[in-house]
Figure 1 (tube, one colour):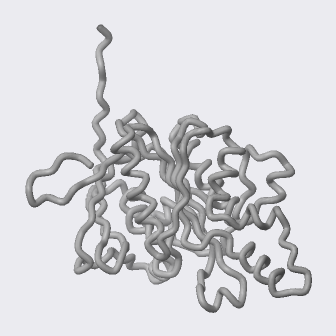
Figure 2 (cartoon, rainbow, N blue to C red; figure 1 turned 90 degrees about the vertical axis):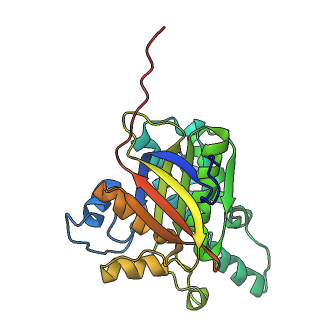
Length: 284
């Protein structure tokens, strides 16, 4: 963490180099930013999750919607950042993992033939997206897969910012959710798929979009909400969509601070600076 004066909140910081976004009526960051900024009316449509690039055909056929979503937003963000995805440390964050695979395994275990498919098993583990990311990009850098229920986006953001702050290297954050089928859906009703990815770096570059700072604050501080009923319903229903207040500031290129849901005891305050100064070094 960066140095602080007595009484100040410990703070993490990084620069955003690239953003990826896929959700209901949000096919990518470029189109999604216009809707979030209020330049276009938000028109929700069922999320279309594209096939991720880079995977061999056989591996691509084995992936479920959850892996495809996590990889697709990650690839959007890496491409926008102009960085080699193979060199990025990665944090993959999801509250649910692949609910469809979990449902299918439960059905198998409840039946007469309890032999679980090896493909289903390896797709059921929570770090499946991280594994497929390494296959698609050739990445050999460390990756983390985490789950923090409804706090999964904020937890992933803190993890990624901590890596940037301590290791001083670029880090990819991919946060994503896909719905469970019934009867699990009745207990965990995620209405649609939503994914967001950020490429974060320790230093600014000419295409840096903003500087982020993040710190913990007391739960008495209310999390930011969105004025549009449809976007606010999405924010409340899908853990990865808790990112929407932050994405709105970035879409509007507005400086400010947003408070994101985290735990019952704490929130995460995220500051956004849009005027980024790039350090220019003269040749000796």
